[in-house]
Length: 114
Image (cartoon, rainbow, N blue to C red; front, side, top):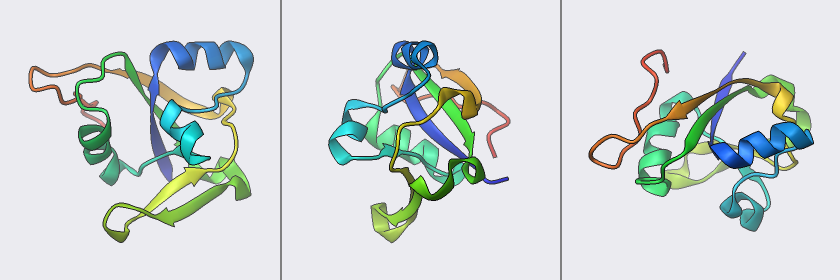
């Protein structure tokens, strides 16, 4: 079960849970897919793209449950990143935990993130 991660705004995620569908961030909607990262990529993604952004959740999803809409596509430095080319059913999330900001503006990740 490969777990992938998305950085979601907490308020948007709560609304998506009520609606039963998550469309992603403004960047996701602009790019045409929901950006995910592996455990080995998510810290750098947060530092590069979401530094200083409060109110985020780290949403974990089993990649195998996303079907053919999940594509592994080259991005930063040629690394393959998981991109979901469809809305996400919030019920598929394994967890959604708050990502507090440290004094340096970087997010503090859970100790059990591989």
